Image (cartoon, rainbow, N blue to C red; front, side, top):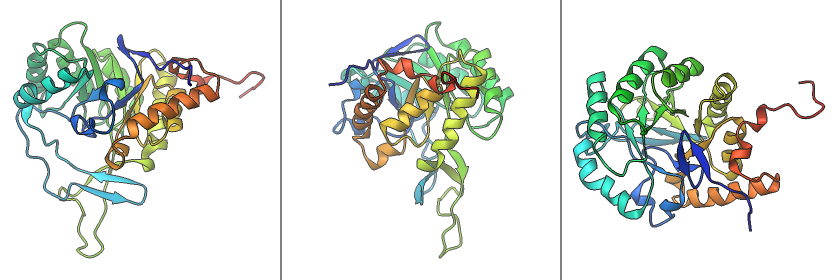
Length: 301
């Protein structure tokens, strides 16, 4: 039996496990396959102010090493979410991180003000679609301003720009932690129609293909901003993948496309992470955070 402690602190939020789900990759539909209350938290699908029908189909396509997707954030809108989905999580004793997205600063502000009066929210994750430090700072400033003090705010950054600059802009404007990172822009063409396979044209690539890319983002931000809590997400399929994120500097991890293939993966990866910690005589997940940045004894590298 493992003796390692998985409990961790994410920007003041006590988590019983560093393993979370990623936005849009599994919520209440995972309940038959895994104990959601045993996870660090469940990140909801991304919620917008008004209901959205989502992108035209097809919305997902497999690639040789990952999943291409463009869902268009199909969701019932904030009112529908608060009335139907959030109460269910509360009944299950699940810690909830609400993912939000908006098309303007005014909409971000309205989302934050209405979430400020809702109960049962562990944190808010701000979905940022553009890899731009200036815009990231403006959005986080608005969201932070309209949420109660003490509400943890996570900034999920988009790849493509200077991720360290984005992370710095996010925390300077009120984010308590950054999530690195969203899927990478990608496209696949159909050999028969000679057209994009997704209804939306381009999409985001997730899965094994992006794990090393996401790991580098976590590494760079931890190296530059070691006091900023980081959540690593991207291509995690095993306990070692999760451990690698911790070693690179992440405090917690999120599981994405692996849950679409294996809805019980969260439980499996949690157990595998415990085994990986034990194998290396690490007493806790927290002990692994940033360990790969330390120089081995006797090394001049």
